[in-house]
Length: 509
Image (spheres, one colour):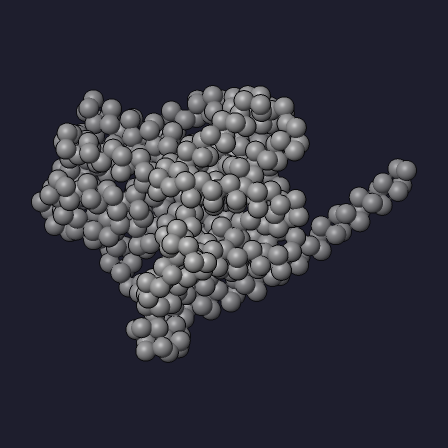
């Protein structure tokens, strides 16, 4: 009950006009940042961090936190309408969001994304209020072997994201791993795969690869297809129907719960949990072949996981001082600037600050829903802009986004190269999502492997000796077997549908 009393006091402070203004500014700036490819919450928070020297701590952190979870929501807009993820975590949303937009159902897809983000974000904040200290303590039990087992489990998703060919998916996953190894080795500091060029010592930037494979590739495809507009179809009613909500409600809850618990683990970013949530929905679906063709659950689950992971990341940040993602690391810097040391003592010495920030997250999630549902129609008008105008705009934003991450023209070159590669991958039906997934997981896998082997003196059996890691490995094998079974069942059903269509064509002919 003490937490509830503190929360009510926090709400009393959060609804003051100045604090409400900070929440609104953070949500709006975050949404805009999420829509623009390549900018991201990390850059936006870093740019605005000097405000900590001007604003009081509560107002500054409220706004910076709003930018973070607002950006997590905003990335879904271009994913659904343009097939261009504004954030890395929005890549899974493209898989079904864009097909829905092509079918004239972009409006309901955007509405479900907004509602799913609100529901999951709000549930995560509830968890933050009542279970923060206990959950943060349990999350500390995860060491390198547990993280390594978790990465192995995540890699089973490659099979489920394979498209028509598991061999092609495995090859693309291997390519993603190799690309993630470019640069200085994490333990030795020795350059790898640099081909004698010191430019590659910093590695390849994920944002540049994403921009190339999605944004620039989409422009090349549009030029080849001689598109008149982004989408020739209407987007449909921006408010999802009751059938859409029934179909997606369970996916929202599952994605929200999964994202929340995964978000407690430092280093487990929304980029990982959104893939896990999408994969979970595909595994438990009665008709998994619908995914990738416009399944509304394929939008609801990753978007819910996205926002719940972002909100859950505040638990290890505030209770232990451990940032779960780069944006939260910058927020930690903001807290330190104000002399606010995260940890249990923060709740005791600065309860007004902590509970006002937490209450503002409830309000911020509600603001995102109220502000963005009416704006869905405005965003959707982007699809009606002539392609002769929109194509160059996308290219310009892509170049700016790629350059802004490290202020490097090399990253722009990488984006262009992967744009061309992405076009050829599309033409020859090579799935790009396994490449992106393995590029994200590669450094996490390598770091966990090195640390686990150091702990055990090179003995791989440490994974089986620790109960949590052993349980995760067993679950990984079960999920892999299930994925292969679902893949075969889907392939058999597709062949059957094609055969029936051919028979119908013969009869009508």
